[in-house]
Length: 382
Ligand SMILES: *Cc1c(COP(=O)(O)O)cnc(C)c1O
Image (cartoon, rainbow, N blue to C red; front, top):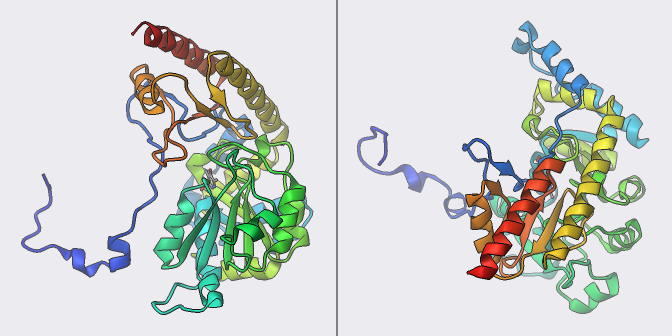
């Protein structure tokens, strides 16, 4: 029942039809129940470095009344040094999600009713491989642009450029193309060489979404310093344990980055987040140790699950996509939840037989495996 006290009538018709009909992005559940092992949204099991937490605590005082630096100047300078580029090649966002939205608004035309010619439709296309990050289509639709998903190969590989040309579905002139690399939700990594070949064939803007790249064998940062139409998207959320603070950034050609600065909110990045991210960059060895721990847990988990009859996809991220044996994945999802372990299941037809499991701490992975073993035992006797 509604708790509101409005008199009569609904204001729904005041909302733009496009927005009324929009299918919003569905984030993984953030449960209110205590004591759950949370392996559903790819958060890092390890806390931020002690120095990051103390820098944030030290900043919490009367200065909260002031606006933060509008362009996150210090953070951009630090990142420019790290990536050997200039600060005008970097923009910080309220999470990389904000930048993905800004990219759509800056580079893609809303589709018009009679957008008839091929070149017209390319201008309003947001292209991406499928499966990948399901936010891309929502951002395209919100903007009135056209989502243009093109399937990955069966093993989640990116088709080669000749394959894409033969397939005739891929639009080399799409205004904006998102490539999740390594891929989510499969975890598959791609070589810089194959990404370079793809980027070289593209005419529109290409964003390489490297949200998970710190857990991968290689990164493609060099491509955004070499190709004027290529942008790299990174986030402090997953690898740097800062989901809560919402800090992401893009690196690319100064003119593309300037376009994004022009349309962003003046104070889009909160001050504590800027401080946390700056302190993070001074504690990189702490994080690099944790990346190694996550990758080691990932191989142990993959090996153990394979031994239990699961089909585990190779991963270069902090999660694995795995197909459980026996009952449907959805049943496993519910059984694990009853045992207080939360994993992610996707309804899409090509994903519904899988579970996506975030790599947690060593002890969380032990509990997960113990639970799966006991569930398997009870399933076979059922
Ligand atoms: C998590 C994620 C993001 C968004 O991260 P932010 O928290 O908004 O920085 C972007 N792309 C992919 C593929 C992700 O998984």
